[in-house]
Image (cartoon, rainbow, N blue to C red; front, side, top):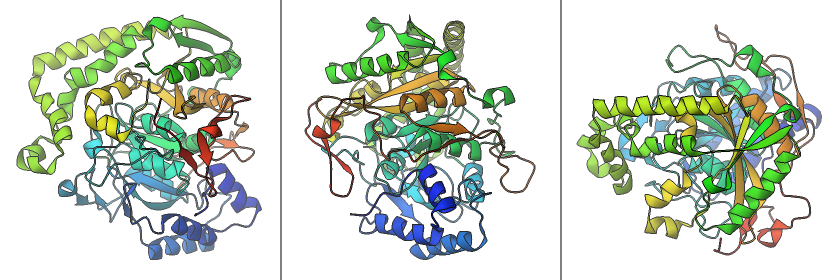
Length: 510
């Protein structure tokens, strides 16, 4: 079985101190892809000749000291443009060949990263299951028919399976967090606008953001700092204020914990137990905790699909949907068509209500710095999703759908396994531009040893300084695919390591 690629920090250490070259590394990448024929994870991959040529160019001309992502293999969700490759957004008939890289992809390439290919997704990034693609449904790396989560399904699985070090997804309703939860990895959903959405097929343009999957928080944050920057082609972009670049220490933070009556685990006692254990662990890291109501958050989240924002999904797809209705999966079409129920009056009513809810949430941020929530209340198999694809999708979004509507940042981290062997996860949420503070607390929760570089990284030419500010880099290799298990737990009884080092999920119970 092919070996895992490793984390960003592990590969950087190997390049800098162990004599590894991209030419050697690319053969490991190709071995990890061999025999998969794309599968449901990949929609397209770059040819072996292209990958080897890129690796040779980096080895010959690149500098691992000055290029922050030198030789680091990564994947891109197939609603993000890569020059020369077809962007399908999970719909073959919609596909077009991109003439230039999305700015976020170009920044990563300029930083020395090695693009492997483009990954599967729920069609038009509409869904949280990973089961809404004509290219096939992704399964979690833990097996047993467990869904991978979506819509950034392929990106999460490619990272969790060790095929790449990191991957770009997108996140409107939770697509950068739910797949991370279901595959035992880190999902960083930045503040909207920090990563340019130019060259990204829109879902809800006013809410979309590009997200990052990685095996550890340090790697995800390194990618964020390298890739962030304003693009002239992106009217939604914004910068991270200088005073927010340096993270606050966990011991200074006030943590908000949802009231028991506001938590919903849909009958999944195992997830409830894991969340309580995660909260207990966080209590030891922060200055203090207090219980907070979730009503304003969840009501805001409901507006995404039960309010006029679903109509925003039609702004870029209405013409295609009318001309090619047969090209769109029935479940995707059913969701998109609900947008036709809303008119301009509904849109303003929804906007007014959202402003009221934002005001309530803004008051809450005067009392807490970070909110912790379960990433998902429960998990499902592909068969269970097929029984109720829309209702169970909504259950997966209970704790994620509000974030972009309320202009929040979020980091999702693994939180062990339930007694039945299913992955658990929690998400740290904060106001816009608290990304680095959330990441530092998330790294502490996962036991990552981290150091903060104060030197800015300037990548490529042009007026934009990309990645300016400190980058969190692991000072020691982090455990690949770590589940951040509580001391004394033995999750491998349910999720055994195979001889190749990949976890296999046993059982179908929750």
